Image (cartoon, rainbow, N blue to C red; front, side, top):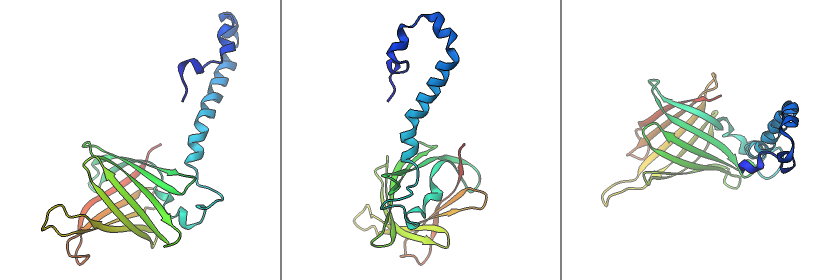
Length: 197
């Protein structure tokens, strides 16, 4: 964290103002370099590893979802924004969803090399919890799981979410649910991610 009193080295605070004006360009360059230095750990944390326990091709299968995104529904209406970051030297992806209507949530996504499957744990500000697992199928990440019933007579509902990278650089997220264990599916959400600059 950079505090206001850390922005200028203490030795420079004692310099005559006329000298500071004379060296304004050099000080500006030092400031830019300081900001870049402060940003480097964050940039490095989001980079995919070149070596280590999570550098395999399988660990990189969901990297197409990384980044900052604007999300719109199938009709083009903006429904929110999403930021997906790599964590723990590329061993996990963290999703941070902010819906236009105030709904927000986060997920942690990880590839399990032992089972050769992806897992997602989703939690949100409505008390929701969704546990999904799956794999890459024909270039799309497909994760599924059962949502927990809320009433005594309620049945578990099968949830399936498919993320597909599109040729134009967008990502489609299709969320479907089934009340008959996958016999028929109903679309819950059909979203299109456009990367923010």
